[in-house]
Length: 74
Image 1 (cartoon, helix red, strand yellow):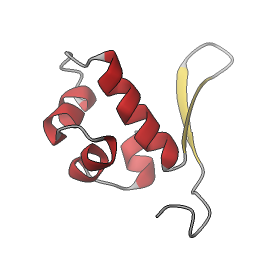
Image 2: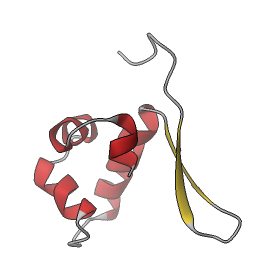
Image 3: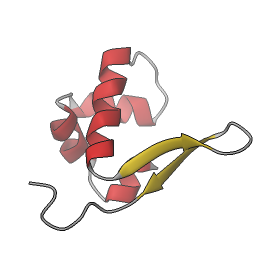
């Protein structure tokens, strides 16, 4: 969902997070084996693109997206 919000492919997100594209695919298909430091890299890359990770009032995980200001992502 977060990757779809920023409209980037697996390779682009992997490059931004400095992980292998296979790692992103494995995470998205819930195949496991994702280390905490790798998850943090993915989260940080998505947050730089405007994705916010939060929970709703029932404790369910949610994402919000706000496009960064033009010229803010270089």
